[in-house]
Length: 322
Image (cartoon, rainbow, N blue to C red):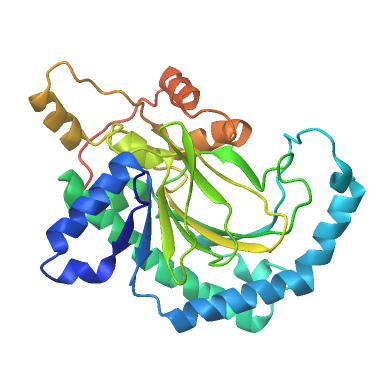
C-alpha cells in the first residue's frame, strides 16, 4: 500500500530540494493531499492554538452541541442521517477584511492567537502556491495573482470539533465532498483520527501527526492546472470516543477573480499533444461558490459542466506577476 505523502519543508534548503519538489508534485497529481512537517510554525505556538481551541469548545460550544443532539433525538437514530454533520463549528474571516472582533464568546487571548495564526498560515499558503508554480513551470507569483481579483484573496478559517458519536455508521462527522476553493491548510488533532480521502476507489486515513499541517487542493487549482492537479473527495468519520479538533484555513480566490486554465500550461500541453484541448471552464469565483453552496456534497464534475454553460466572456490577458 502506498504511504501517505509527508513533506519535510526543511529539506527545501539543501541537497534534497529536487527530490522534495518531486514529492510535492507527485502528491498534487496523485493524492490532492500532503502533510507538512518543519513548516516554520513553532510547536509551542501550535500547542497554544490547540489548548485555547479546546478550552473554547468546552466553555462555549459543548453544551450547545449536546442540546442540538437532544432536540433532534440524534442519539437514537435508526437510519442514516444525510442532511447534517456531527460537528460543532464556527467560522472566522481574515481577508479581504477580518471579522474576528465580531465573533462572540472568544476570549481576548484566543482572539489574538487566532489572528496571529492566520498571518502565519497566509504566509505559508503563499509559499506553497509558489512551490506549485515552480513545479508547474508557471512564473513565480502566478497563482497568487490568479487568486487576487480586485481586493486580494479570500481567506478564512473553519474551527470544528467532532464530539464522540454514538452512531458513527449512521451519521458522518462531515459528509464526503471536495473543497471549492484554492489551497487548504489544516491543523488537526494528533490523537483522535477521522479524516479520510478517496484514492483509487478506497477511503484512506489521513494520519494524525503531532504539529503537522495537512494541505489539500481545492477545485480552483484543478481548473487553473487544467486537471493536472486534482481536488480530492474527503470526509470525516465520527468516532465513538474522543473529541477531534480541526482548524481548516481556506486560501481562496477573491470573489471577483476570474478563474481559468493557465494559458502557459495549455500551450505546453498542446505542444506535447496536439489533441489535448482546454477541458475546464472560465468563470468568476463568486459564481462558482453560489453553485457550490447547493451542491457541496455532490460530485464536482457536474459543477464544472454547469460553469461551462455560463462561461464568462472576459478578456483573458496575461496575468501580471511583477
